[in-house]
Length: 457
Image (cartoon, rainbow, N blue to C red; front, side, top):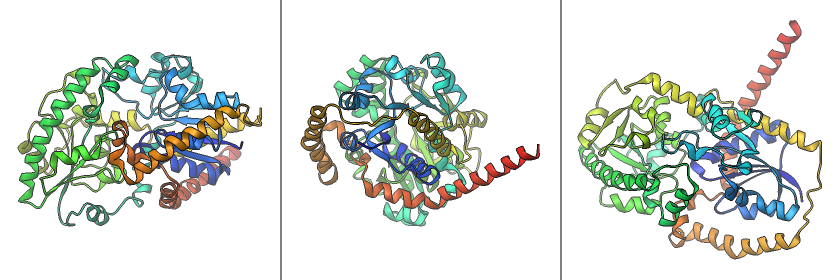
């Protein structure tokens, strides 16, 4: 079996673009062509049959149960475990949830860990007992998409509005929804409570339910205010939220759209203003200098809140949203707090975080090549049993996701559009090709300049 590098991801809109960019850098800069990408819900098992990942990058890994889902097949089939890199795609939580992000046992600790900032590195060392030598503090790969170099790859305002059936001259106000817990099953709630790290999770679910109901009432009222001004509202549900459920809440309102198309940064870039309840996405709106307001028709206990949101203004109803959006300035309440948060969430904004990740992966892969393995299948029974599961479970699941998503099990209905396929990856590679070449060219020029400086010295 040919070895390679395998990226597993959870949510398309949060992770896939920066993973594809890193894959392109590994190919263009280091000639690493056997890099695969799979989503954890629809194509992980299929992809695992095609490659032995000497390096396996995972979206999160907090305990043994998650390690089993990622690595057990390779251990049983090849009698060898891949080197795991925990991407830690969530690094900023409330006081009540921060401990949820800490590795809890040797299976989650004894890996490499991506950190975005000094704060999270310290957290991993203290709360997770991670050896600092295994922490890659490289910044958030997703932050590269906010760099000006990538703006030319964004969807145009005209295409953006056309796709939503919104007139070009109309304003569009984005509501970033963070109510995924509302749609959690009882089994999911119990699983989170059992895992630990998120105190009073059931209370947070109840709070989310109440806040969603109240927020939608105010959003509907705001839509009514905007109707006289030819304005529109775009609801952006959390990646784990079924789009169909959100559409039911506003199906009778003509100037409200519900969509999860396009990366969030591109949607914010093309929006007139941004409304949020409890989302880290508001940091993007701060970076893009978009009027941003936090809608709180119901107060949130401090332990569930995100501290940095205090950098924005808060409102409680539709009229206050409208009054705020009509202001010409004074969008921020505490800009110093937001600047600090940019560092915590993104680390660097120079467009080189994916390059840094690719460099780390190359060095790790080179070290692994010093002790080569033939990566032969040792247990064909495990392989064929997994193949049968792929045929009986994953093929039908992918068929439903593509053609009949409403027939999917409840836990997959909200995430069917996270399903990865080759056409999607090729489309992203084409989208970012010129920008990646530019970044690599700039890096080469910088390396030559540093070399000349060292020779002069």
